Length: 143
Length: 485
Image (cartoon, rainbow over all chains, first blue to last red):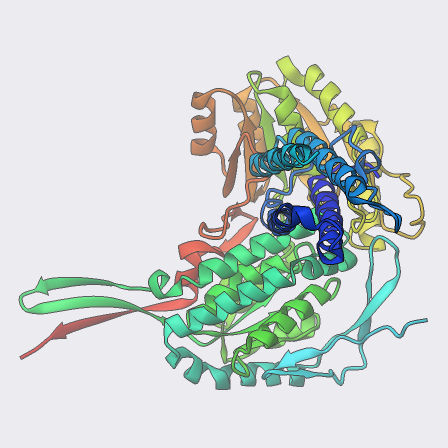
């Protein structure tokens, strides 16, 4: 799907945040990555906060009714693939988590550039991108 | 096939069926489907709403302002919770895009937030020793029952320009929505029902001229807020005045946007897109005529055309759609006639939105972005309100000629200048005869704590909606002069 409005970008961001959160909550409750319990807890909290932030941004920042078509930004390039098989091990989960954080960081960074005409939205997305990047670095330290 | 719901009135804290046999269809403009039926309520039902509001008044006005304000804090909370649902309902009955609907709800909430500040907003004035040993105070008191006659283009937001302030001031209220888009108000009244306003404080009655006239002729109602066309607005104003009521009447518009040679053309063109095509041009603040100075005319046209061609028209519920349909088949037909007339008058149609087709929506009321160049100021497309996505570009020699053109038009709702010169910007806001002025802005929409202005044939009355004007409109200024022996 072409993400050609601010609302479309924020709705997609919200969707992948929720998807990522469900994934981390699934790992949290499965007990499969107990060695990284704290990291997973922190990621869940982080994504919960981001979900709230994005929902609020969509409610409060689309006030100027700006008709500024956005081009060259498609959701297909950033869809999360969190399908897992039952025999996936700790390292498999880690690889998936890194992919999620890297993908989201890339998406949010691009989204921040595409929404420059709405400064508050752009700044918030850029901030979220930085946090995803920080998550990625933390995950890389695990292996 | 799902049964089409018949919309109810909300009177005295209850949802009630109208007994009227006169029922109209409400359409989804994107699909052409009938989504609801709305009753044209009877005079008796209107009188019942007035009576309920009047009975509720005395107790409500004695409710202390901070308590009244708390109802609006609660209303804001529920509106935030139901934000997406409220926005989607607007799209379904009005056709605008989901982002535009989100913006509309946000603007509505801002009015609720301002009303929650009523304990300070309605404070009076005092002066000691106006004469020896004599003090004088001014207090603001609510008057009674107010009502609004609302339009289809901002079916949720416009009543919120008035109702929160009126009710927070201690008045009681009746909303009559547009029969073309009544559902958004039903949703808002569901919110108010959940808030738990005392019965009769807020009331909703559906209908058309009969209901409006009953409200206007009632000896009980104290004032009317109207947003709609100038011819109807003028009638409402006259009738309200004849019945001794307060009135704030926002009529039609033909908004002119002047682009000076020193304007940032890229950013100006973006603002012009928003102005002319946002909400499919169905805004009283929409840009209609671009006054392009000769020096930049050609370059501006190039960018405008390029940007307008990129606008994706479709069902507003789809994220990513830039422009939705217009409100009705009749409205579409009227807009197409205006375009035909422009062609007949000799304007150059450089982008034709008449034959647009939207995939999967063969029955939607769509009109594509349309641009006319070489428009003369005396042509109908430069004179009359079209209320659709039609941009007319008039070439002007300079500032003074532009101002003459603007002033020759009977409307005075909004006008903008695009320039990098502070001198021209000041001169424009100083001289131009319009109520809402934009400097490098395409839509000069006042925020909730400022009055929504307008002049000439775009506004009848003296106190506008929103801001301190609204507090004054909804209250009586009483002066008490005191001497103690």
